[in-house]
Image 1 (spheres, rainbow, N blue to C red):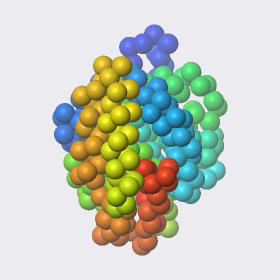
Image 2 (tube, rainbow, N blue to C red):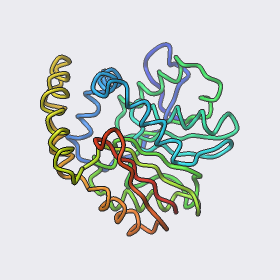
Image 3 (tube, helix red, strand yellow):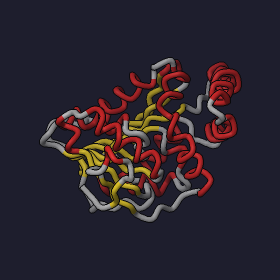
Length: 253
């Protein structure tokens, strides 16, 4: 693996790479701050359903034994670990994120899980808008709850297209910006009455209030499909899951 070592004693042998990141500094600060309780909150706020959605996302990526896969905006590593299990010990998975704290937690989870296939994972602190990989490098890409937060979605999509091999897929899981009034109203109610109050218990109400605005400013399923096609993908389809509260874009290079 790479160069920077964590200070925690039980992670003395774990390292990750660092690159300059171009992002909104307040968004980077937000994800660094919520990192310690991110996984617990995901379980509470989705009633555990996020694990199902993430398995679906990895399955849609088409990752298989021996592949080289990239998990963008990997956070604490859920999709990275699932991809690692898909590609096996003879494959390779790269988890890239702009949050050093999230990567630290992801790496510590790798150590705690101690699965043999997880030796194929490399963690990189980097920029989704300027990926440090050559053209046509990966067989599959996943991205969970990241596209909504990048400062330039078009550039991020173009970078994913660039580093994918021809015929390979990207699978992007995120909140769904529904065009159905009932679903949109229910999603807003959940944020106001479940998400923010729960986050308040952890002292993170302010950090989670941004969700409503970020979803409002996000793209609908059709707009995401168009974004992928404009980046050069040959086809793209957006699936509504989780009762329409979540969505998953699948695009083929």
